[in-house]
Amino acid sequence: MPNFYLMRTIMSQPNCLFPTRRLVAQLCKGALLAAAGVSLFQTAWATEGGIGRPITGMQVTPYGGIVPPTSDWIVTAATIYYEGSLGASKSIPIAGQVTAGVDAAAEYTILAAIKTWGITVGGWNFASSFGVPVQYTDISSFHGRLPNDHGTQFADFFFTPVIAGYHLTKTDHIALSVQIYAPTGAYNPNRLANAGQNTWTFTPTIAYTKLLPKENIELSLNYGLEFYTPNNDTHYHNAPVSVLDLLALKRFSNGWGVGVVGGYIQQIGKDSGGIADVVGGSQGHSVGLGPMVTWSGKIQKTPVSASLRWVNEFNTSNRPKGNAVQLSVNATFQ
Image 1 (cartoon, rainbow, N blue to C red):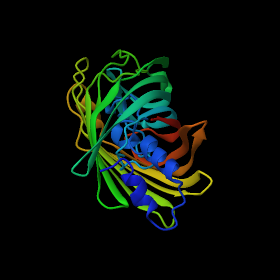
Image 2 (image 1 turned 30 degrees about the horizontal axis):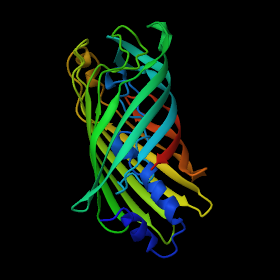
Image 3 (image 1 turned 135 degrees about the horizontal axis):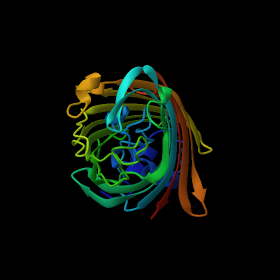
């Protein structure tokens, strides 16, 4: 299948507003972020710290279900700022202790790269990715039960060995992957503010994208199930975390797009080991929703895109409740 397969199939739809080269570039730079592990914007706090890796509504990306057949490098620079609070009536395990409520703020910045393989096998296309994050964390417990803590540190390195994408129809696409986080970030079991988690995390992920060319609308879904290894320092073992994100985006011929993004995080089962039994396993959930703005174009000859989103968590249980803002910039190098 030639490299212009996606270009031809989508451009063959009526009233498509994307110029050919812009479409191919957009597919290459944005399609893989969710499936590649550049679902990216995840704090290094474990459910042991009350949150887990995902932040509500931050995992889905435009064209998340499409892996293009081209051979390119996609470079992403992104930052997410999250600020939330867990009420004083809720106890969570953190820093090897139990505390009633926390205020937390984090700024998570990452540089990631995705390589599309440029091959097609039985209708499947493939890619790989990796990323290196840096995180600033500021955490304080209610009533001063634990000392305030903050710091800027390297967070856990992540990689996705293989992302496999399949084109169900001209407008329906899926991508399958397993994202892996390695315990490489800074971690001290006695600190509140840790950028590293001290666990391996494996996240089987499916991303789906539905394109409506006539209306120039995209609908994307990203679902992952996170599995954590035990924390060897605290003997705490996080239960699996289910993460569902949805995105609806309307694009215009001038390169701009507007939409809405939402997420639902649900811990499956209860944590175990260490002090998990003291707090009843810290099983929790969160629901959030907010707006998104995108732009795509070129800087000189390089295809570039940017997106900005804000998600408000309006329904949470046994997790901090707050707001997250994400800004990302992507460039494709052919």
